[in-house]
Length: 453
Image 1 (tube, rainbow, N blue to C red):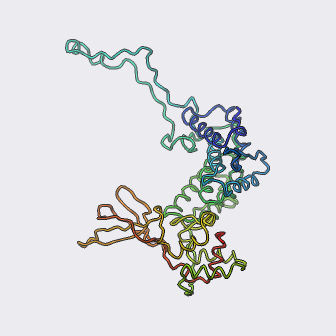
Image 2: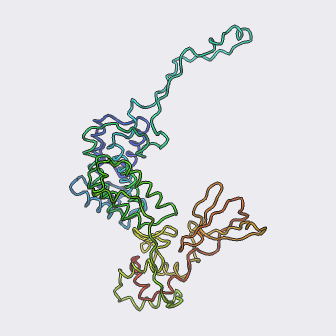
Image 3: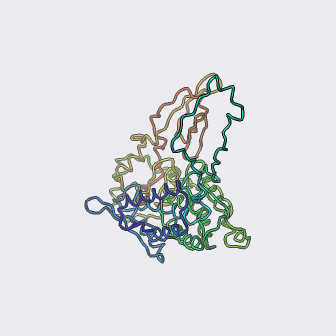
């Protein structure tokens, strides 16, 4: 099997990977010979990294076939993905997302129906005849047995857990205990090693979580690889923040992966034992009380910062201030922070210093629709009404969950039948005085952390 990844433009590679996934979902797992050949071909180009656009706008593919430098290749892939000219959905990330899921699925012999296990298709007659309708004259002449079909209907085979979804979800069809060939484990270990390297180097928690999600079905683990994988949950996810269910979802991934660890590796004295424990809820950051400095206006702050243009910023203090000024409560920066407001990882690449400061000192001047608050007028249960404002965090056909205090993480839940009115709020949920406890030097350090000049 010659997939010819190296010869294809980036978008064509992506479409071909999707086509393979669709083919396997509909036609089942290919033969072991084809699985081995396809895995070897895909592994030679995993992880993928995108070059900047070639002359004329064409996008070409860059791959790293050297298995000995998986870690270096992953770091280079991330570096290319972070290139200022790369789109938000960078080609390298798109390809690695599909390659990871597909290689994981191929390497695990327990996943996916074999072609022989797929539901049988009923055969239609070559020349179907219209069914004769019984007439009043002959209806009484037929016995009860005459009206029954002469052959039993075909039995349609059903695969286990078919409701879990098709490829690329590795758990689409599960066949526990199905044995594979030696190459499944050998190539599976390469998939795991390269994916763990991508997890270590990925710049966003979304990418890391995707790789962790796929690896829960990986096959061919070494004890050292398992330690690296489960350690990631305790060292990384507990520092990430998201919605109210974020830790629950991360724990669900960890628990699902842990359920497949053999008993021989679960011994209390093993290196893995401590990392198999459930995730603890992340502890909120301890904020030190800060004294009031100045009710900064935008002109005053810009003038003060202009005087500090020759000062070398303190990035370590800027990172500490990111938490102490409560930015991390709502905004993600690199691999830490919340998801209430916009991601600030690349904010300095999109906006200049003036715009960043304006959004902090006057957050209600421009509010994106994505982060706009709503005001609900609700029945208060006493014959009157009350108003509640906040961000809609979750909504079902019957209820609405509103984040009313992002700094404290407080939410309120309402049934829709008590909501009398719903309208967009005129102010931002972000409070305007977050810089009032910072000196001009500290503001400069905070901006330097974002890369703003």
